[in-house]
Length: 288
Image (cartoon, rainbow, N blue to C red; front, top):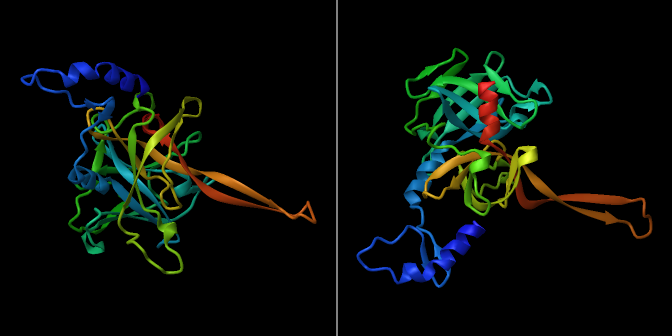
């Protein structure tokens, strides 16, 4: 991004003085500042439907996820720790609901998965899990999956070829959106938002850890966001899924008693940075 900025800055005079009959490029340079076309709110709202709410054993725990189509087969993708405690499944029944930000609970399409017999894939090295569904478009599902509510909300499945991006393709400082269900923000039955609808959060790609097969976003994630898709605004102004939320990076404050130094208290706060697992790990899991 820094190289692109310098290139645009150096060619700024040529673009500003370009003949009027020539088409200006997508990125316009004004006083050395790059201004990009804003993505339409409609397109962003359409992508909100990508995220799905996962409810484990009638709401005992929850997480986020999304559907991914690989070679004609749909999979539910989420973080491994949403479904597993170590090597043990955390639930017997999984309820999956999909609706957009303006729909109502009766509008959402709901699936129920019998986790005792489901075809679940889980990675031993990355925080990734996948459930094989079948074909959402044709309504052809595996035996362990049933439709609880038809609803009217369309259930989107991300296309592997056109709507995803690998770790080596993403760009530091590019804008991203986190689309998930932070159900932990509900405090003492005080609801400031509908937990059944996805919430959008915006940030940038803050760093890439290729050795750990992760990337960092400066976007706060909370319990319930785990497994949520991360969408990058790419250079062609299209949104593509580049990975999932794994965990937030904590900021630790340690308190010590002035009179008794052995008495300490550590407080873990949300730093505002989140660790994400790239699509490379998802495809590796499905194709292994």
